[in-house]
Image (tube, rainbow over all chains, first blue to last red; front, side, top):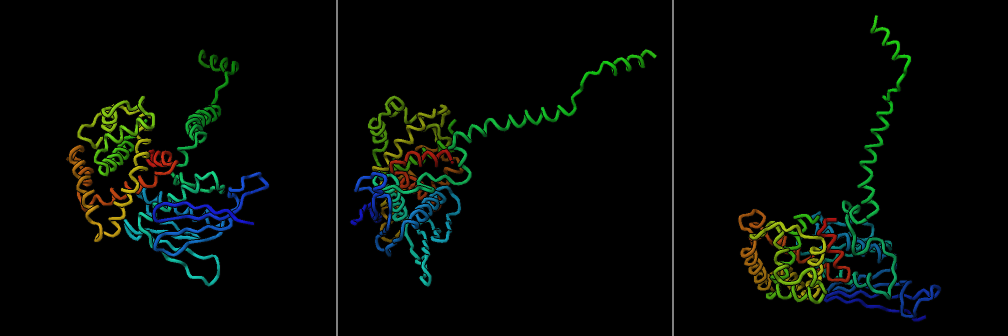
Length: 195
Length: 166
């Protein structure tokens, strides 16, 4: 069966996606839902290629790293498959670790331009209606502290929960000291006073 | 409510774009027309007034910028980054191999400093850092990176996340 190929370009970087449509889902013949192979070509650098299961983690690595880079946090990303860290303000060091045994890791140094081109290629892939990939992190990855900000449900809960807990605990505490009026006790104390 | 920090960041990004495009103010206004933002940004003065919410500016005023006005500024920033991406890329590239293309970087930095001197409160310590050619590299490079990461269709959302510090 002839496989579909899609190419995403951005200046010095190109990303090739090879795969098949999911015919069981009545997809068009030019669609790619089952990715069998992908190739990332950065000018003057060795070819990076892999299977579908590697594409997601590598895209995530680039997105997370680029977010760390612009947010003034330490730009280091480490995983089983890929490490990215900044050598300096202009050069980024990428270490790709092969899943096959006895294969040495591949070291690539890229500049800011290649990094932005790569991110833009991944963005094109994410936005392409012709490729369906399961997104784990995606281009709008938001690091740790901001996750609550976008989720309206969580935002609403964050807003409503603190006063609710405060009022509830106040009722709970005060109910233990609640005073029930006891007419017998009142009468006794009145008698003591008159004496 | 829009934080002062968010306005500061966005105005700096717009200033970077103006550094690249000599006719930047006109381009920003033209883009607001293209994006049908005339009801929010009817003229160049409105854009200027909104940008004056940046506390680092000489002409700083608190106009309490509204969410839709801030969003409109984000949209024109993203759109202009798309147009200027080849130039942004070239400036970043010039810093990667400084010996080859230092002229591009130096020209960019000189004009950036001129604009900062012209518009920002130079008594502020943070502005002084922007003016110092040996110290402003990091700020400029990060700003250029932010702009170049936001040229996709989802660029608006990306930049918004960054500016709101999510």
